[in-house]
Picture (cartoon, one colour):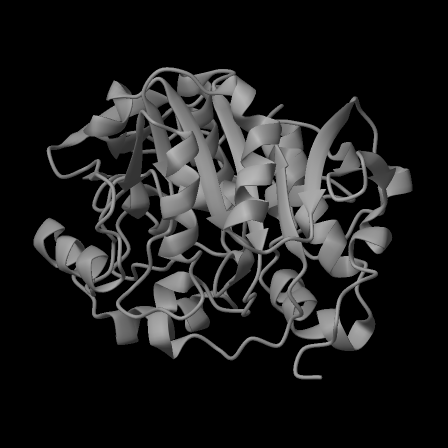
Length: 363
């Protein structure tokens, strides 16, 4: 099933309104039918902090949206990384306006001497569908200062999914298995089907290979609709894919979310992305993937209504909050955390304090 990027965007928009039914058993899939989300875990239900339970994780925060700010956050979370480090980025479609700037990453890699940027090819036809097209897009977008490993270029490999209800295994780019550690460096933003794209989406979709793994996530077995899985089930499949990758790396994973140029669109939409209307916030980092994504979402919800409206609407209408509740069910991290403000001597702050400096977009 080949698809142009324009048709891909249209298809995702249509699929975003589809309620997914039970998954059929097949190769790589668990035999159980998809269960309905438990009460309070629906993908459009925001769970306030005071209703959460569990151990508290640590999230680091800076308002400094610059190469220096990125390096500051990295310094706080780098202790988990050793050996050969894979830096998972969304390097973007050609001339995509909202990706993490290549110049920032170039400076950051000065602090990670044994690092390689890793990517996979796309499921849809576009600027990154084949390795040859992908290499050209990397050149256009300025990713020429460091090695970039398109990990499915040389084949794919299965990783077990422990405790999943959709998958027993997930397929990733074979080359990813040659790394010792993983840094998920994520542009936090909206997403056409996922509601939001944080560390979970960056890994779950971005490490799955372009033909088999991504098909398992997006397409119901036997369907001729590439985007036949949506809403809560899609969030669960993304999260199970992520779990396969982070279980492989164990404790040698750290997560950074850059909250800048937050369109409701993913960077996979390139120059067709919707205009940015959400104010820039800063950068967060954590050794806990759920805490990183949950804190980012909490920061959005802590904004004034006029600043958060579009992104919250995108998250809730796509049932994106199910990413968070399902990650917790899978034991992937904690949705309770404390925010360490690196700009103010390590003071503990709330999401509301993290956005107190925010200037409404366009003002």
